[in-house]
Length: 102
Image (cartoon, rainbow, N blue to C red; front, side):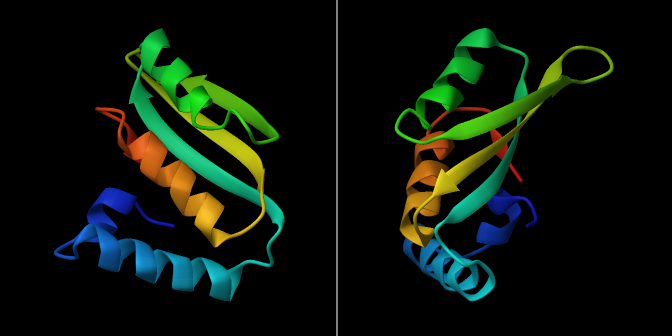
């Protein structure tokens, strides 16, 4: 999936998430592990906020710092029940300033 922010384009959030739900349901066989990818400035507080969005979900994660250490990429494989849960997590993480969702 491309950067969610750029995919939003001119769509309002409801249209964007309705379209995303349709795409998810057409390409995934829920329940399953779903891979989330984020890039964030290397700030422990923001990274912790991302983890909080996954509090009630079983997940594994990997992180990698950029060459200069300014950014961290986070990949989280989370067991989700349906497209609605995927979207709820994206919306929660989307509230965190400076997070790039891929």
